[in-house]
Length: 433
Image (cartoon, rainbow, N blue to C red; front, side):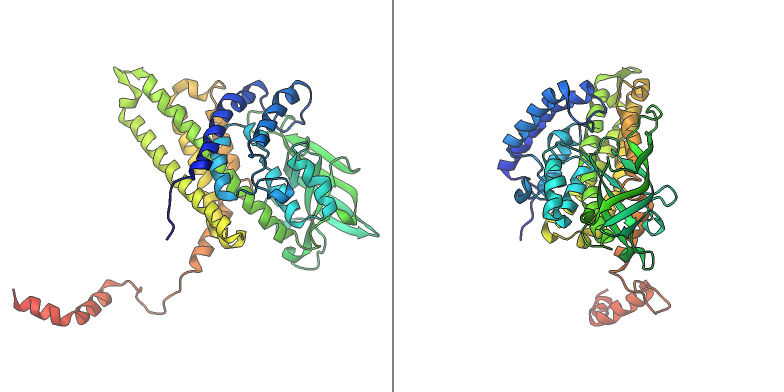
């Protein structure tokens, strides 16, 4: 029987190095080059970042989510989870380690479903960190419900012609290519009638209507694009996987993306808890430190317990993915992790913000950015409510209804059965009284 909560000593050394490296070398990039992690490297930024990437490669930690046959390390999800906890503290760290969203998920599906030519053209530069990608799925009128999508691709000779609009296509403005999910056969169910295409962003007809930012970002300077595909013509070889295979591909793409978001959320939440504890020990008011106040102690205890539960949940789910190598078998737990994720980050960041007082709500501290990030996590890769439905349906599959008027656990009937089972003993018991 194998049951262990320890990290392999050799890998722990790797994690210890990554922890120090991210703290000393990578986290400063967040302040030196804020919000530029998805802008192609050039000039002084390249001079600063490239040596860090090379050190990561030298240490064997580059693109650990992809197998060695494709240029990664093939460490598996559990090791990636332990590493991502560290990387989640910094916006730049996933870039430096070659495992940033949405590129990790996009790389995974190209690796699984791409042709040799597609892998050479898109996957290898993506893994080398030389370009960025965009997953263009959501539509303005449909949200995250693919059964309502109307963006279509129609076959015209040796080409496909794409028309429609996509919303919240993250990083489209700096991406070199898009993975677009479209209707290719409207006569059948969306589950069989949708396909995916690899579309270079400079293809004629790809028009970014506007870039949408999150709350607090300047208007027009966000990274989530509304895209109009206006007679975008791509060759037949741009099809990713088989025609009508979009849903199958999407499950691989989104399953990995959701668990990776959760891994990084652990690191971000831990950072908020660390700041909360430091503030509680450092600040005095009304004759004692904040750490002596019962309210603050409650904040710390609740945050620690919440984060510990979430971390174990994520690690267990990552272990399941490695064990089964099939996202379908882990669908319930991936959805459950997705449900828990935004609440954990929101609650811990909010408490840390409160403990910091007025300073906590300023742009000199990161808490409101974390709270906004929690809101995004509640919507990215499918809204929380949809995942709750998924969890419930999957859980209910393990149960059966009863045809009896009374529940199976109705105690009067069970009590009668128990007395009948132990009647001889009960008689002796009564006789000895």
